[in-house]
Amino acid sequence: MWYDISNQSKHAQEREKERAIIMATRYFAALDVGGTKADAVLFTESGEIVAHVIDPAGIPFDHGLETTTSNCKRTLDKLFSYADGPIETLYCAIATVEYYHPQFVEFFSKNFSVKKFRLEGDGCSLISSMLGHNDGACMVCGTGSALFVRRGDEYWHLGGGGHLIDSCGSGFSIGRYAIQAVLRAHDGSAEKTMLTELLDAQAGREMWNNMVEIYAKGRSFVASFAPNVFLARRRGDLVARNIFNTCASDMANVVWSAYRDLGGPFDLVLNGGIFRNFPEYAEAVRALSPPDVRFIFSEIPPIYGCAVEAMYDAGLSCDEAFKKTFLESYKK
Image 1: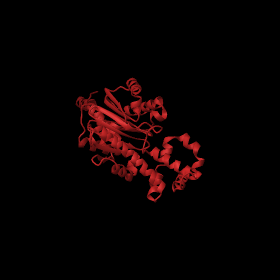
Image 2 (image 1 turned 45 degrees about the vertical axis):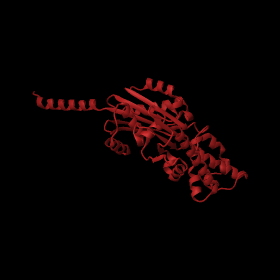
Image 3 (image 1 turned 90 degrees about the vertical axis):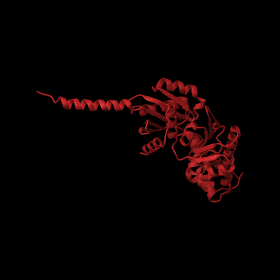
Image 4 (image 1 turned 90 degrees about the horizontal axis):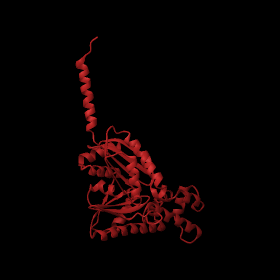
């Protein structure tokens, strides 16, 4: 029996090349956790996304620390299973993490093997998505709301104390005002409003018979009624217009506070479902804010900003080629 040594040698060389390519691949990971979902990506130095995981999630204010950390582990365990080499950096943007930072750091240190990881609130990634790792600010308006500022190594937020304390101008606030207006119109303590018909239709019954569900389902359920305010306002409803104006003014007041903190103009990135779906609201906030603050409306997913920060932690920057590759592979 004889063997084709040259052919064996060729196959061995090919396998060695494949192993060399695998060993040469640099992996990075990013995780974005908000009020309803976790978005996680594993990607390479070129911006190519190797794996993408989306899971239901939530924040500690709503679900507690243990549930939130367990959800993070579930999502990242799935993501890391696609890596055939070490992961250099992991950047996580987790809403309200600043209130639980030591506990999260301890949990991540024990459960994930990466060369370097960083945990921050969801503001820095939004700034980085449009401005790169530079100074600036962002304002989030979805179910909740807050304004985040980054200046050098400093990072702070205005608002964002959660829906029970301070989530001014948010989807929750708008939805709560709408429900309140309907209930007051029903008992005669306030004027009639088109919101009654709209909210009843969404709920499937009269809102004043819906209190058990409102309290059982909490802030996301309340926020789900916010779009009715924008619809009623467009149709000329005065109650809806007053809610719109009140909430836009509340948001603008936060911008003015940041303006005073920074001592002048700054770049402000806008993101979140309310701003994204109701641009007239974002325009109203801008009209009431300092005229020299530059508003930047972002359509880029926050996870891209997380990737920018993961690359920054590895000592790498993200050029236009990286951005193009990342966003194209993210959409697949």
